[in-house]
Amino acid sequence: MALRHAVLAALLDEELSGYQLAKAFDLGVANFWHALPQQLYAELTRLEKEGLVAGREVVQDARPNKRLYRVTAEGHAALEQFAAETAKPSFVRDDLLVKIQAADHLDADLLIARLAERERFAEAKIELFGGLLRQMRGDRDEAEFLRHGERIGPYLTCLRGLAFERENRDWCRRSAEILHARRHPSQDAAPDTTSPSSSSPARSRP
Image (cartoon, rainbow, N blue to C red; front, side):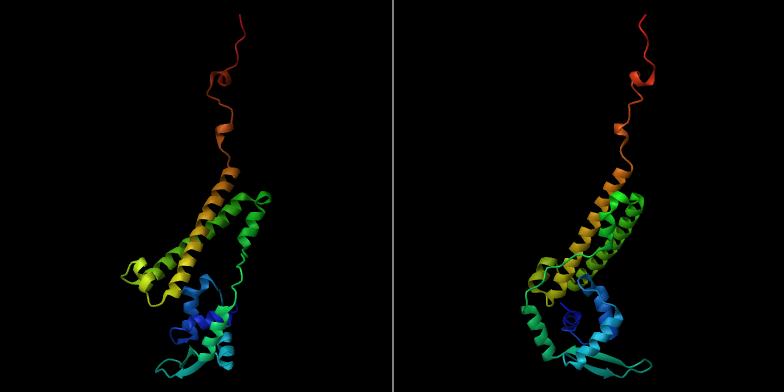
């Protein structure tokens, strides 16, 4: 998959400016495809030159003019062709996993702190995705929305993002607990200093 396909998919339902597209990516698309605003603007320019999107200038009073983009028939055909291709397996590239891989040779407390950071990030994303899902389904329950919702694609990708971040959160918590337990082992294995045999010297027999 290339960035262009994610951009085309984001423009299917409505015209968007480059700024609006960047916001759409940040809110929803970023859970499966990350892109910086400058990358999106550059991709829109390329897609327009290739005829896959069409842009039109909108004159605004007291504000700079903006350019709105929509998918053309050629762009829709490109997405159809992309959808027909076999989906490639996804791969994880995560610097935190590299750090945890080396946990036996690094400061456990530092790694626990990094795991806590990622857990907080995951919690924020969980809250964000939960809000987006509620917004998309409105006053309908999820089962009804999944059967009759007008735009089911964004909802399904948002569900995937929610599940992904929940798994991230749970893994971070468990990994931190394990590292903490190994860094600060239980005192149960220590000698029992309360027993008579250990608290007082052995008496010699008369």
